[in-house]
Image (cartoon, rainbow, N blue to C red; front, top):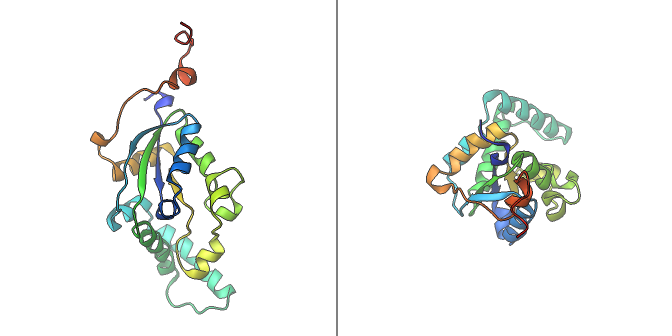
Length: 200
């Protein structure tokens, strides 16, 4: 089992983050927490990568599709397809969004990196995400608006939900040669047990 300070999370800066010139601000917030970037690149994602990344099954499509169908009925809209197809449309919209322009996947390393990044990023919906979080501070999109426009929510950034999920996601976006191992000076104050290397 690896040391807790080596836990990894996958973060992706989405097309809206890049188009709005927020790359530096988002990376700054992650770095200021004490976490370390050990891989980073700018890429055009493929549809296959995105479908593999979102990793949803028929049960998920059915559950989400039924919610969409109820939402449509509540708005007086006709049901044009089976609920499961509406569920698949959610991922289709995400894939369309994630492939519309460059994205920046990165691997973040540090103690409880998954939980720390999730805290920094905030909830999925910007309008209900806490003030002080990336999504709460820097975007105004909402599920209601995205649903009405039948598009993916534009919430700037993806982060892994669990350490095991991070491992799976990292393998989609990076090969082993792209992941670096190095020390930062700040790791001494964060992790050294005795702090015996500070004074001269």
